Length: 200
Image (cartoon, rainbow, N blue to C red; front, top):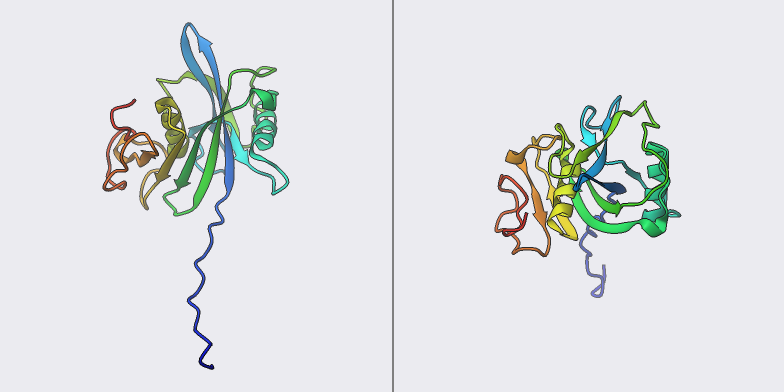
């Protein structure tokens, strides 16, 4: 090593989180908004829990809207036009096992066809539920996205801790809405309900 050689610190590991997309299909029934949910089944993460129709990008060739349109068709049989898709909220999520991901939640109120279970090996039920009376058990990550959507947030962080339940439990609500209130002094406290600074 000469006088010009300076040891370099190891480069920090870059994030390689998966990207996933979630469909918030909304319909009005007797003046009350309802959202389409499916129940996970089989050898999948969170089997038995309700979740939005969702999936991963197929690769770098696919954008998030194209992935949403494809996943919606594959899971529900419904055809959504990309022009009828509206960005709802983005959620940076970490599961109790420590794996992180970024989820793009999209709203649509227009589609063609009637939703049905198209992948019975991973889904055993599909139905509409009032947005203010969601079923249980529900995947906590999905519930965080819907709570952020209802609060009008455009971005949220949902970092769960080891030992937190996979399904939503208000005693372990880790949702922090970005930009709607001051960032909490400790985002790890068990505070029921989304921390919104007074907003629902």
